[in-house]
Image 1 (cartoon, rainbow, N blue to C red):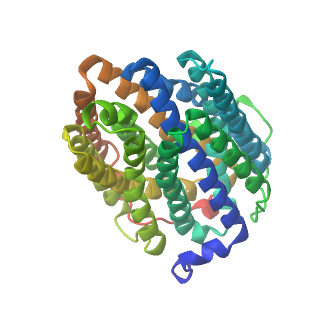
Image 2: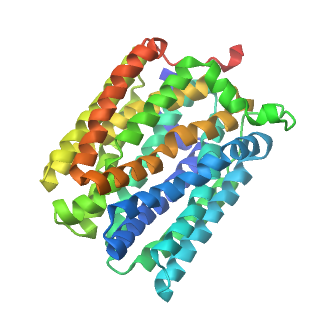
Image 3: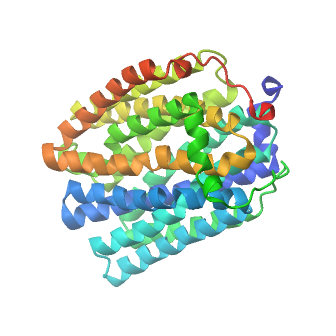
Length: 411
């Protein structure tokens, strides 16, 4: 029984422990890069629109590779796919370091390298997500998702803060450290042992390539959960404008930017640890909608704030509410998807959810360029609340989901 397994025991599970450590390493590396790239681009251009372009060029590879990624993850060893894609991210970090040291890193060069990072991330993120359920029995998945999320949030807290401090020594220091961490992550992934026997892999056909989209469309509750988070994050992408808020509104430096970047993860980590010990047991659909509503309200508070402390607190609440949605949605989608489909569903999910962060950054940068940073954040927060109200009416089965149950054995 899930309730009989203490969350600490997950870390005694060798494969999960390696997965956990790999997630920490890669997320710290990525978050350090985000801080350094954002601060470096804004110092070069002082343009919110260019900050949005950074998000857009990360999104484009995931959009165009979504069907390739899913099929690769379902037909090949997921450990090897993840390992090599993470090495691509390491190489890109090395190029950022070389460009900073050599003085040739223009904004156009940064955009091109970030595009490569986005391509590597397009493969590594959904592949790692599809791998997690194969490391343990299904009854442990809700705790494993929360435990994995807590590892990610620990890294999101540490990564931006380290990135902000290391940036004082120069952006190349940040990028070199990121490169080393990505290499470490690749090594850890190669050591993972998959315990669940792989399902029979179907031959590649046009139908099988697009099967992830077809499966999600056939499951209204899954589609509703994924699209709810997509639009909430797309509209509530206030974190893309943190360099603007840090520099122009809150009047802080790169260290302050690192703390602002870490604040959502503080709230998210607290919730993830709580959910690892106390999984949600009822009314999870309603709870998810309430959490997304709080996310929108916290975005509005952040947008109106001119106090560094109030802004930090608003971001903590934003991260805490988002984590509830993440754990519910991730567990629900994985438990509703058979293993032979998880790569393709995870790839589509990654475009809808993971890369909505990058597209949300572009949206925030664009609206900030049109209306200003504060109106852009307020529009996003209000839009999130509107989406919550609409999705309750459009997807009533999702709102009424009561418990997380493993349904893959019934398929």
